[in-house]
Image 1 (cartoon, rainbow, N blue to C red):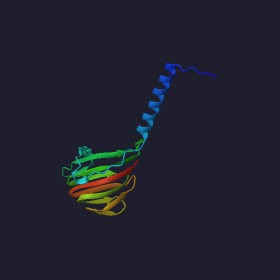
Image 2 (image 1 turned 90 degrees about the horizontal axis):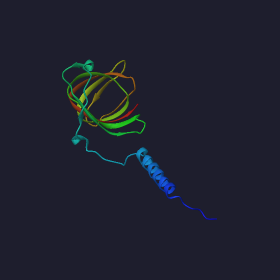
Image 3 (image 1 turned 45 degrees about the vertical axis):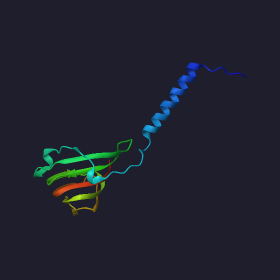
Image 4 (image 1 turned 120 degrees about the vertical axis):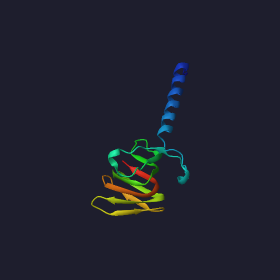
Length: 142
């Protein structure tokens, strides 16, 4: 039995295969990477003025990785001295530099400094008193 190949069908099949491979590559996890956190360039992340209790704190950050569904984030975040309130996501972070005290409403007071790992629960209402510009590396689950 002989099969004649239709050139147009062959070309369409090749384009479809290439598109499928590209889509698979787009949803695959990004390559492994390393970042020197103290030197990473961060971008402004304006605070809602209603969150500022005192001072003139400024927030900067950079998302280094986001899951395809947008529910997992890894990055770097920094805040300058002042007092702010927040409602937290489910977060694990490690402080790289700076100092802050975080009061969790109805819970503990966390003393943060270089090398401290902390976990905040989704929905925790917090007050951050930042004593020295604080920089952290984080993983958030939304």
